[in-house]
Amino acid sequence: MRLLLVADIHRATYDLCAGLESHGFEVVHCDDAQIGLDRACQQQWQVIVLDATMMWKDFAMMWHDALAWLKELRTRNAATPVIVLTAGNDVAISIDLLGLSAENCVSKPVTADDLVARIAIVLNTRNAAEPKA
View 1: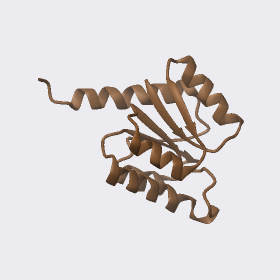
View 2: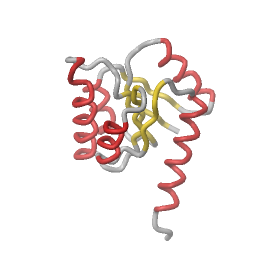
View 3: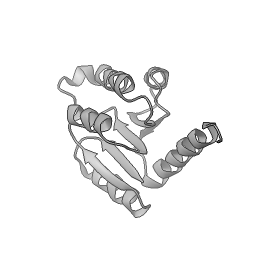
């Protein structure tokens, strides 16, 4: 299963990638938001994981940029499920992200096991919602 992870490069990201790969995911990591958006739109993914706390050009614009990223993704590629990693339990940000069709928001730190479980729920929900032929 192909997964795009858009997140900064740091130890926790490497650990998350290794954990997801141990669960059988083919993880493609992108540490640049714009390149990640382009890859998200140009290739097929089963799921995209976006770290909303990654270092954007202007740190003060972090949440705005994450919302804009997801909004642009939805205008260019509405089908791919997105799980967003957030810092802490900021309910307002999570509500905004879910309003832009993020399938789930997960507070960091997150383990690979937790993320795999959430991915399974998202994919099972999508599969159940698809019309049967």
